[in-house]
Image 1 (spheres, rainbow, N blue to C red):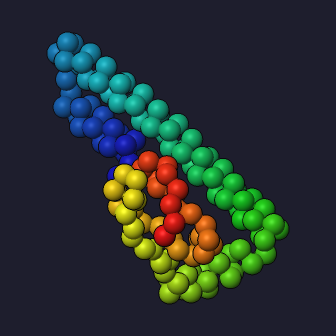
Image 2 (cartoon, rainbow, N blue to C red):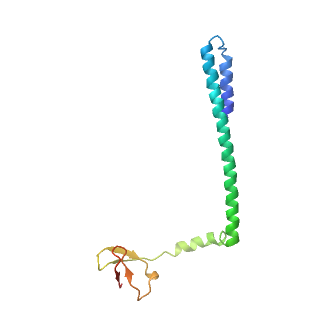
Image 3 (cartoon, rainbow, N blue to C red):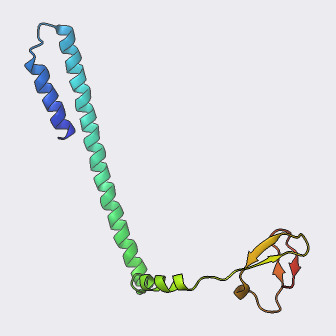
Length: 129
């Protein structure tokens, strides 16, 4: 049941009680129903704005997909097929201790040439591994 339907049901219950002899209670019910009607109207506006926003985001998503596919046609096809291959190729790390500061750290040996010095990330001193 929607908010408007619930308010209409409540209005029917209140009007069915024939509260015309009690003016104070009748004013309260009128004010309450007026406030509920205002809330339902605002809720409708928010719902409409949310629908418009959802539509806008979907259009943006379509546009971005088109831009990406124009830039790299294999981006959305081959990209997902390659994910399994990437999982098999784990990056290899080695652990070492800096001779200058004595702190341990890990590095990727494949990222360095054989004659290249390692740089300690803690103290910044270069050293041979």
